[in-house]
Amino acid sequence: MCIDSDRRGKMILNDTEIWSLSKLGFVLYMREHHEEAAAIFRGLLHLQPRLPYSWYVLGLIRRDQGDAGEAAQALKHALSCDAEFWAARVVLAELFYQNGRPGEALTILKPILGARRTQDATRDAAIRRGRALWKCWQRGGRLRAK
Image (cartoon, rainbow, N blue to C red; front, side, top):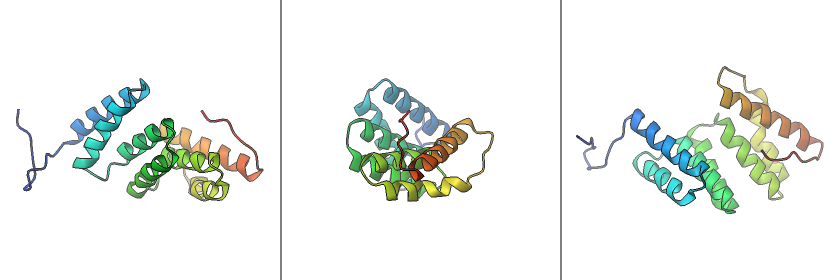
């Protein structure tokens, strides 16, 4: 087996390898093996720092571990890589709202109002949830987390 690397000797992964490792990391996250999942995503980010999905799952892991600050940082990184990563935007808004920062939560959600629905079920679910949260929070209410 040949491992590709750049001129500095840093390993290079192709899209299939990144997808496979991301899938494994997410399975570990879903099974609540948070440290193992985080290690996979940190490794991916060491090789390619602009992988929004890796930042997103790291944010989910930190949120589930009760570290709102680290979760917010990871989710902001995901959005800096892809501003239309609606799932990351919704989770970050929920995190802000739950931590007493409703103004920031609404600001984070505002771009979702103009988002177009597509045939991507995950994207569309995030858009629907974001819009529902926006309406609820505009009225000063709370929407239960999924």
